[in-house]
Image (tube, rainbow, N blue to C red; front, side):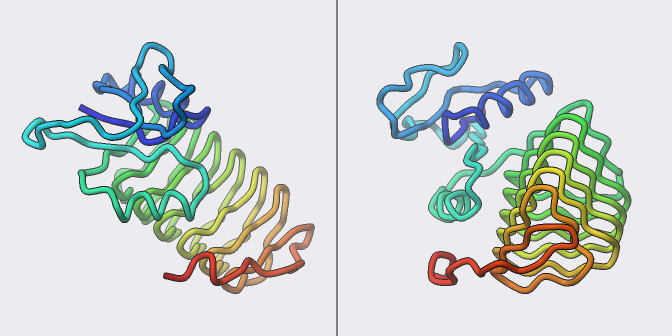
Length: 207
């Protein structure tokens, strides 16, 4: 049985991926009392009492990377991987627990995807890329080969990253940005070519 944490639009997409994988969804968890169901699935305010012998698993359906990390670190069940059947995933790639791979995604040879990563619709990850935990690659973003992406970084819709680039931890790459130089930790980058406009507050991400 699989529970989803979060009952937003992101959860709807994950539900349909799991349905196409023919996996059993037992319900969702969300603190908003106004949400009673998503599609035909019940929404609970907290995790129901379950027998862990039933092989309970979870996917955290929260788009915000830092929120997803905090939830993952205090959740003590195993995590499922959701992969849309239309995704093109190399057999020589690795995908960590709790990650979601949406429709039309391409992951090429010897890519390493961390835990609780979101690979959103139609994004492309080329050979030998390394994405750390809690990364979010938005729809139609493209990473060329040998790109390294640090923990918690968000790459916006339609962004492009040339080969061999190093992107730091908890950076934000704006929609449509073209990355041709390495990106430091916490940087917020926009434009073509990408330029730093500010830095995310380190205190938000540090323990």
